[in-house]
Amino acid sequence: MTKKKFFLQGAALTGVSLFLRVTNMGYRSYLSQQLGAAGMGLYQLIFSIFALTVTLSTSGISLAVTRMVSAAIASGRREVIRSTVARCFAFCLSISLGIALGLFFLAEPAAALFLGDRTAAPCLRILGVGLPFMSLCTCMKGYFLAVDESLSTAASDTLEQILTILATVFLFWHFAPQGIQAACLAAMAASTLGEAVSFLTSWAAYRRSLKRNAPGREKARGVLRGLCHIALPCTLSSAARSLLNTGENLLIPRELQKFGLARGAALSQYGLLQGMAMPMLYFPSSFLTSFASLLIPKIARERELRHKKAVAYIAGKAVRWALAFGLFFAALFFVFGDSWGAAFYRSGSAGAYLRLLAPLAPLLYLDVVVDSLLKGMDEQLNSMKYNFADSFLRVVLVLCLLRFYGMESYVAILFFSTIFNAALSLRRLLKVTSLRLSLVWHVALPLGWAAGSVLLGRALLGGASLGNPFLRLLGETALCGALFAGGWRCLCLAEARWTEKRARKSGAGTGRSR
Image (cartoon, rainbow, N blue to C red; front, side, top):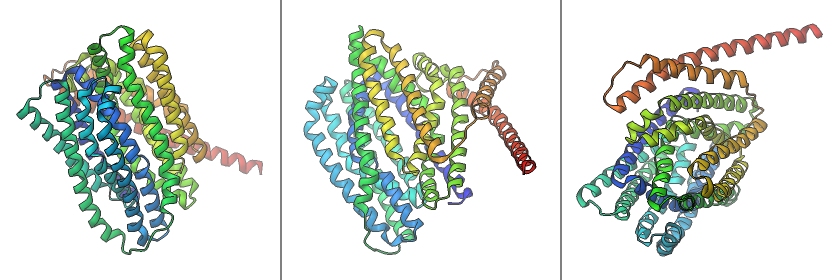
């Protein structure tokens, strides 16, 4: 992939990802108004259980398909692509159907045991129907990423999002479900419908793409070995992590009740943090995830060709961009967090949580990029080890602290786990890529300018009166972002000149010593 094509495709994917995040935030805002904070807590808990089954059905498959198809293209063996993907399809379908059947028959005891509410069982059953569709879409997503046609995936994701939202609004409008459980069931049914349509769209694009990228039908060898090497460790580790995450999410309301809160209040606190504040915190990462996903095949090909300098250069650029991006949004959330809470949820409490969690933004966004780079470097097992250790520690800390100190202790746990995970992942990346980072040029100076640009933007907008909270939010973000981008560009130029000057002095010193 050329640099121009990489950025054009990344920009297009970023636009789609931004659209999906914006509509998802609007969707969650609509759900929060229909369900309330306690309903959002139950909604989040149901999806926490479903996330475990999704992990078992899909984890590692996309990466395995991307890596195997990328290797076939790099070695000039495009004729084995059809067979490779077809065998991955069979693998995914057999696993996802088995898990879907298990979820269907065990939904009621699972709802009673984990949610404390048997009436939530239909929600789990209807979500299980979408598992095979999600699993096959994951395979096709890995294929599209390897052949540089990620926009096909973006189109199906966009259609899925639109249909899910429209179906949810239709169900709430025409049937006006009574009670939290019935309302959650309507939202889950709409989600499953969107997944089915997304699969049909992706399948049509996949069949067309094969005619361009897979001219032959030669039988692929070593597919099962590749799946075992790449997907199986990811699946097992991700399943263990997902199980821990699910346990953590289920424990939080229960431990808050032991702290002294009523069930409704515990669900409300959980819904505010995990259902409202955390999606806002992750929202800007839509600008990074698209480029990060494109880095996997790019890094994998450079590694396959043993281009170590190219790997270090790509990794360095990606990490520096992610750090600068995260530092800016950390400052923006800290200063304008109330505006975000008012714009998306009309909730001052959600905005207060966002301001409190703002310092996590640089590490969370950096982890998105570092995780993709490690996967491209065949380091997915180490990445999964770090994620598992992080999740295990969080569950232990939730059990030990939450019943005594309440929600404040969970915020402290989030800070500890984020720092722990980011430190391990970044350390591994620095080791395998020989990457060099400067605390002054890549952390301290961007952080100082991020704070300065946001404060300057607030001062310039101090007298502006925009009645619509979304318009105010857009104005604040656009102005502060423009100020930061200009200053950061100057910092990059200054760093390049300083590095060049240092290299010249080093070269001159070497010449004199000789």
